[in-house]
Each structure stands twice: as structure tokens, then as C-alpha cells.
Image (cartoon, rainbow, N blue to C red; front, side):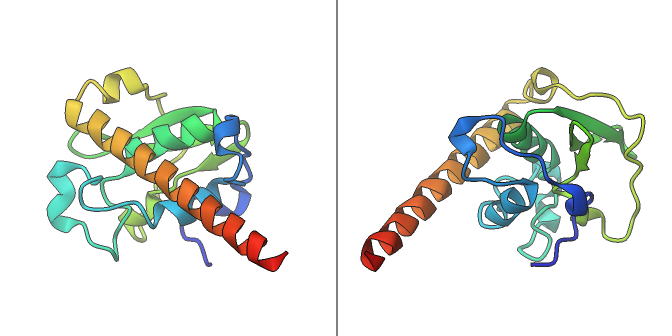
Length: 157
């Protein structure tokens, strides 16, 4: 798969949480999330523009905090017109933004941005619920894929 998200070339962070050891790196997380992101996980103010062709639209904070759960590190935010922050991840020297594709050709500045905190973002109930839904659906997908992998391995013996 050809990736377009910011930092994909060096997105080699490894899971900090053993529950997610089957996710090798942020590229693999991106692959999984393409099966999970949906209109419901999109920020309500952006849902009219969401489509399967632009599935990263409105997914930034919930995705960045989920990636933080998996890989550790910190979440930072780029101030956008209108006062909202676009969130991305920094794990050691690895900087990646799984939802940067929503901006098309626009180049975002990933330097000297303020750290973002889940307490602030999740003070909005709808955002917390979208994050919990995204996490739950990712975990269901991981179980499903593990079950399929086990079945394939069993059939090969």
C-alpha cells in the first residue's frame, strides 16, 4: 500500500502496550483504521464532508489519542483557522499524523506546537464517545483478524 499520511516513511514506533503487540507500527495501525473510520467517528461539524474517499476527515484527535494508547509518546496540535487543533503523534524521534490526508496538498507545520491532553479534548462528551467507539471497533477488528489467522494456521497443519 502506498501511504500518504505525514511521517509514514519513518513511522516505525512499536507498541508500548502489550495488548496491541499485533500492531507492528503506525502504518499497520493506519491500515486497520481504514476499516474502522466512519461517518460516526468523524467530528460532527465535519460529517457533511466525510466520505469513504476522505475517511480521515474529522478523525484527528480520537485517532491521535488512540495511537498514543498503542505507541506511547505525546499528542501535539496544530492551531487551525477557527481555533481548533489538528492533532498528531510524536513518539521519540518519530513524528506521524495518521489523518493528515484530509488536508490534501496543504503542508502543515509540525514544529513547535503545543502538547494536547485528553482531559481537554475528552471534556466534550461526543468526542470521548467517538474515541471509545473507535477503540472498541479497532479491538474487535484485531480479535477478528487474530481468529482468522489462527484458523488459517490450523488448516495448514
